[in-house]
Image (cartoon, rainbow, N blue to C red; front, side, top):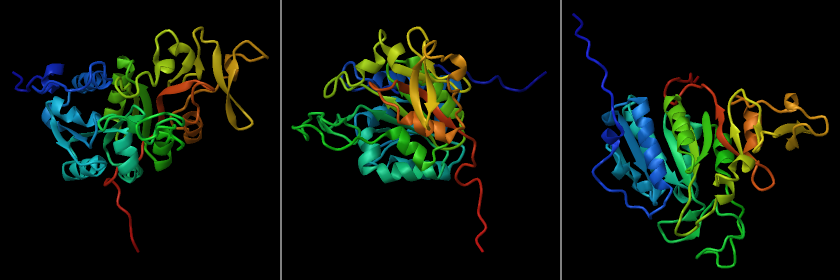
Length: 314
């Protein structure tokens, strides 16, 4: 007779608190909360072994709505608290949820150092290109020319590229998804959960109140096949409604080509490789409307997580 207990199987309800989410109707945060808790079910990690750390912003309310451990920290400091939490109890699964202002303005240095140290922490940056909680000021990712309460004549600063920043900092897992594709969000979140080391996910999120439609040209169902380049490891970089467009390299730069024209066939199309740092960096520079917008995992490599390997100091 076996005395081994059957594994506990969780449902999404096990990861939801009794607090009703307080976001604007239609906010992308609802979809992100749903995808994250669905992923927790798939990962089958008990709620008491999960921790969600947040900073300040609309996105940072998320820990209140999950039945896990959580910490709502001060502005920009979520990465440092998360790293301390992981060092204190390495067995915990630690997630950070932050916004483009929280993570890239006052918290920019903390984000960079979390990633470069390769701490085994998973970070979601919810990028709506605006300060939502403080009612509509320009953020570090606001596009140039955007008229906001703090830039009435249009934002003049060049926006930060979160993926480029994460790659430059040395994150061993870097990805981008958007809030209209729950299935891809859950897939990428689960891959980040299973990754050992610093994982960074930029989530393109719509703010219905202060910057509605920021990503409409990219995320609309009718047009996304023409505007999004979905990254899949080992697969050719092909996109388009008829899968007739692809990415090639010419003179050291990535270019869009039409398959079947000018002697181009599928064999000429680049193959995505999540271990290729140079390719990831080039893909991060592609932006709509001049180029398709890459979505998926840019980079994923295995390296020792922070605290796993010591150094010999003479």
